[in-house]
Length: 468
Image (cartoon, rainbow, N blue to C red; front, side, top):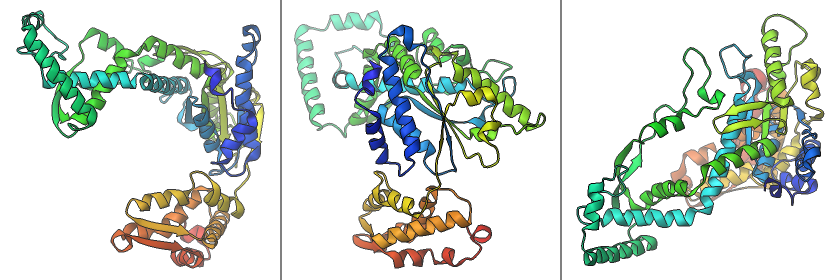
């Protein structure tokens, strides 16, 4: 059952896990942890009460680069919950050219379906691999005059020929196949080639209704599945290495072992009860009291969003999806507009509001030093591939943090994204001239950082002359 995914995660534990990747923003992490735990609590109630409890959607307010998206994305990853990020500005009011808001639900279900499918494939992976190896052995050592047994059009004539193969010949070939299977499993034959038939992928996978910008998916019709049932799948022969053939055939065999109706059902259940949709840039569709121009379109998008967030039924190619218990997390900087510029009905659907703070020097230092996936660790690992070993001293990290804060204050504030630009500039020459740095241990200290960034630091008006 889905609730077991979060049963062991108390709100404090969720925050502890988030602390490994996101520095600061305790209020936002606390709010999302409680919202996630409330989902588990709801699922443990009797059905008569369960449907009455709606998720407490969250509105995050703060500038770019302070962790809004990362908090939502990371908590979804911790839970294994289906998650998508969308931008409010990409949607248009119904009747206009562009994406309709219901497409975010279809995208969420698509993610959920792929997640469930991957989990099911892992459960049958070993059996599928054994079947794939068996198929390769049959291709390499077919029965006499049997042709290709893997051909989807396998004739009665070929079947009759197999029956007529003498038993002693069959036994001998079966023994040879067993020997091939043994060799393949030990890896001896990995680099040898085999000719297999692979499915030719369709060029077009999305079908639009003629004369509109709507897809058949919008009406719950999977055209790819419909065409596949009407026409045989196109295949093509391909010569590849055995180790690659195993992976291709393993996936084919795994799909045969999976009940796809069960996958669809579980995917919809997860999307409905565990799905998280992060709506970014919601401040950019907030109208500011005017009733003409772009504000009319912005308000139209808000009104289209409202039934999705309130709870409705959306048709997808996997089935009908109820949106009542999907968790929506909206975010925006709100530099120009205010949360109160959103239509009142939409404001009411985001009862929890969290303001995220700007990052300062101490925050940047902690991000570099303590976060689980820090940029320092990433660059170390990247350069170790080239046998180049770098290390940052404490004063180097402090210098980078200070420069990041100063640049954000004097130019556009892009939050933690500033660190990407700075560190890339610091290690640029090392990363470029790999021959002169290979098999060396390079210490990056405060002087090294200032030397690489001196041109930027010396510029008085950074906002108009040089921005990194």
